[in-house]
Every structure is written in C-alpha cells, then in structure tokens.
Length: 245
Image (tube, rainbow, N blue to C red):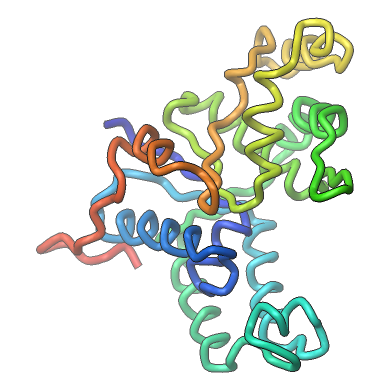
C-alpha cells in the first residue's frame, strides 16, 4: 500500500496526550492506535503537524494545568477548581517534545505563501456554507482554514487517496470534504473558485481537490478501514527495530 500522509489538527493531537480532551474517549483511542502503529513501523505513514498546531498544543497543556479559574477546564477535569495534575502536565509536555524533536514521530509542516494563497479555495466555502453548532453559526478561524489549505496542497502532491486530515472538529469534515462536493456549478462560479483554482495552478476546480477528513471522534470504523486498508491497525513493536520515538 502506498505511503500515507496524515496532517494532524490540534483537536486530534491533544487526546493522544490528554485523554480528557476526547468527549467520548473514541478519538483518544483512535489517535493512540494510529500513533503507536506508526511509532512501531507497522503503518507506512508520514505524520505531519502544522507549526501553528505545535504552538496550540503547548498552549493547551498550560491552560489545562494552570487555569483553575476556568469553568470549562474544571468540568473537563472533574469539578470546581480541578485542573490537569502537574505530573501529567509535565509528562505530556515531555512526551510531545520528544515526539516532535527532529521529526522523530511528528514532522513539523511549515506554513508558506502557497498555503496562504490557497485560503481562497477554502475560506469562501466556509463563509458560504454556514456551519451551525446548536443554534448559532460558527465559521472557522484563520488557523483552521490554513490547516485546510495545507491539506489541499498535500492532496495536490500525493493524491487524495493517500492524504487525510485528522481532526476531532466536525466542522472540518463538513467544510473541507462534504461542502465542496455539494456545490453546484453556479455557486462555484459565484464564489470565484474556478478562476482561483486555475490561477493557483490546480487546473479545473473539482471537489476532489479537497482532502479526505477523518473525524476521529465521529467517523465510522469503515471510513478508517477504507483509508488505512485495515482497522484497527497493528500496534505491536517490531522485533529488531527501535520505535521511532
């Protein structure tokens, strides 16, 4: 099977290190399976992490440990005044630092001008296809849109069947995968997507330009099996081979 390219969103990275970040526990377990399979050379995949996600992960660790005043954090870790235990905080930081050092496990994917330009292929769709969370519209911020643009370029380089954007944010699957497939020709033209795709060297605009999105909290087992070729992945350590980190 060809090598897979996995672009990790903050919401998919955090549950691997801090289980409480997974609403149902599903994304924590699935991220563990993927990471351990790659770590032990069982799955041939390059795990890419945007440089801004690295900053977001470290900032999230700090918030989990030090924000005893934050009701959301208190609820996440067990009640009023509760936060992430200091020992777990230091352990998570150390593990994450080891996993990203010199690309040992996660290879940092730097933002460049082509990603910024490609925002014109993702941001108009996000603003046009209003995403409702409960009763309110919630559009994406710049960081999430840039992650989508990065995934778009990975598809261009490696083919859609070999690239997945991993997340636990259901907006990403809704906007980066389902929304492009739902646009008719008139809407594509009105949003300027056809012209933008040509100007940026993507050729004709097609829904297949956009990445496969795997929402680790909500996607089916079948979706994971179709992308990886099997599920769950083998996570056993290979005899005679050192783990990647």
